[in-house]
Image 1 (cartoon, rainbow, N blue to C red):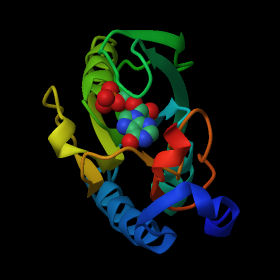
Image 2: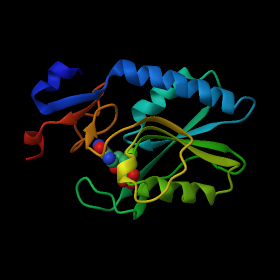
Image 3: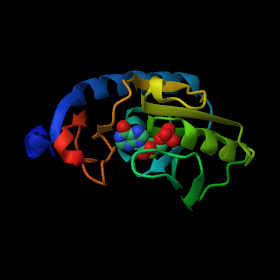
Image 4: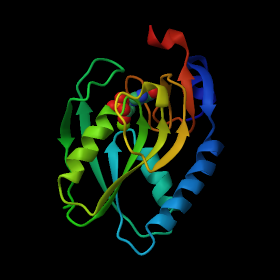
Length: 183
Ligand code: IMP
Ligand code: MG
């Protein structure tokens, strides 16, 4: 899917496919260095993190295992509440593992902050976060994030895994939507 397929729906392109790729190269190199000689379990949060997980993991030279979680944050529309429900739990036992959560975006931070606490309670050796995007101005709780792709303004974005009403996840870049899409 490309820009021309959704041309009328987009207001702006915030990050191109190339920009995302270049940053992922850097993040992967840092992760390779940080986890050298250590076991590493990547945990992806469905559905938004699918692209980050696929593209980041393929750039790593480090052998990894991958597991997936699906959580739902109670809240209306585009706001999250911090009350989280597990829709699909991990298959893996985390005891003694080095866990790296792969995420699409940290907005309020409420979902991730809950998730990190939840995973830490399962006895892992470490739990860190790698996120493609972060909105510093939207933060409601402090989340300690080891790897951040880009800090972006407090705007609703789509593409590269991120949806609006389940659409636009398969855009290879990150963009903002034209106002008429929301109404
Ligand atoms: P948080 O709990 O507010 O940090 O965000 C939880 C989830 O809300 C993210 O994992 C995304 O799935 C979704 N989300 C937050 N901001 C955006 C956005 O700008 N576009 C699409 N989804 C978003
Ligand atoms: Mg998400």
